[in-house]
Image (tube, rainbow over all chains, first blue to last red; front, side):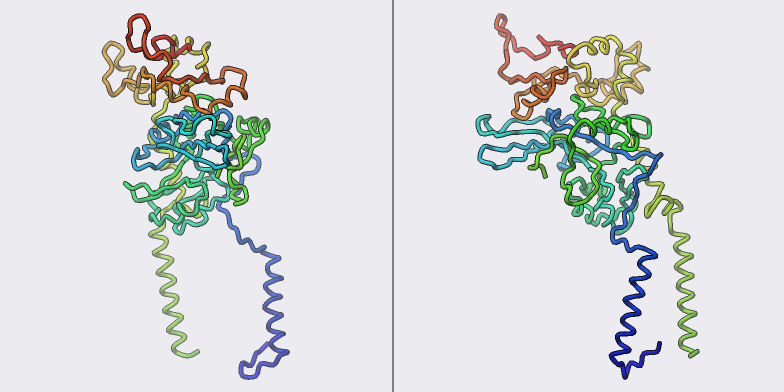
Amino acid sequence: MKIDKTKLSRRDFFKAGTIIVGGIAVSSTFIPFDGLLFAIERPKGKGKWYGIGIDINKCIGCGKCAKACKIENNVLDEPFYFRSWVEQYTIKMDGSILVESPNGGIDGFKQSVPDEEIFKSFFVPKMCNHCAKSPCVQVCPVGATFETPEGIVLVDETYCIGCRYCVQACPYGCRYIDPGKGTVDKCTLCIHRLDKGMQPACFEICPTEARIFGDLNDPKSKVNEFLKNHTCMVIKPHLNTDSKLFYNALSSEVR
Amino acid sequence: MPQQIKRLIVAFAFFILLFLVLRQVLKPSSFGDLGHYRADAIQENIDSELHYAGIDNCSKCHEDIHMDKAIGFHANLNCEVCHGPGMKHVLYAGNFTDRQLPDSLLLYKPVGRSDCAVCHQVNAARIKILFDTIDNSMIRQIDAMTHNPVNKRTNEKLNCIDCHNPHQP
């Protein structure tokens, strides 16, 4: 069809318009339009897919996980950057919420609110959620952060340009720029330990077994048993990050 | 075809070819093997150094303490919870069976009251553990600073471990 630009009739306009719009509509049925392209799919059948469970009821806020993480992964002591840390939530009688995390909980917690003012109080250990639909992976402009086939979100230090976009994108605040290297740094789920058949350091060290780690694809794994026996929830489910960090007894106050 | 178009095609072909050649040279060999990233980066992450050895490594030599601990309240605790990371100790302490261990291989000995207080200091957020669990994972709480600070007979300062055996509390 030839369109004469100098004399475009209404009929020609509708013809051309119908062809363009209809063509896009028909061709989209062959290749479905996917606005959300995710880096990795959960492996079906064989293949590991790591998941994490944290039992808030069992956490005693000793901060040993935060300390173990810093030592195991050579995270700088200062400034206060953490790959894994513990927060104490105190909900007061007047409804206000106090969140404390002195040095990530490494030095232990001191109760700062007197007993009679407390409605309830609990500890929330936090770490990278290793989301399957990671916002941080999607925004990386250079392919420096990625998900392994097992679902672990890692950083390629040699590729990272330190643009901080992923630090902004992470809804859980689990990334920081290492001031020494100038590149982004985050929890690796201790992949160096997993490779040797060991548990990640924070799971290894937890004295009350509040942290459970395992393969979500294995129906008999510890984490699946944990999910079966507890009512678990992820933080910020409305963000559709497909987080793989499940909390038992998570209060709605936790952000 | 006009002369300009022909020249443009040649120029385009040249630059596209140049791009392909440069890409082939500059692209890391493992880029794109598993996705839009350098697959070798996984191995580089795996090559990090270990610091925590795990309880199985401790019990190989310290079987006596391990057995002691197994019947107490601290049975589920990994040794490194209190004593700190022990990978170096596990790797090299075997060479010093006849001599004193150098300081760099010695593990932390938690003797102070603050060491026990990290877990056992009274805190409102720890109370619910008492109600939720009935087995050994129940935690005892104490105000570590005011609980029997001195020996009443001799007036000496007391540490928690003077009365409580940390391996079998």
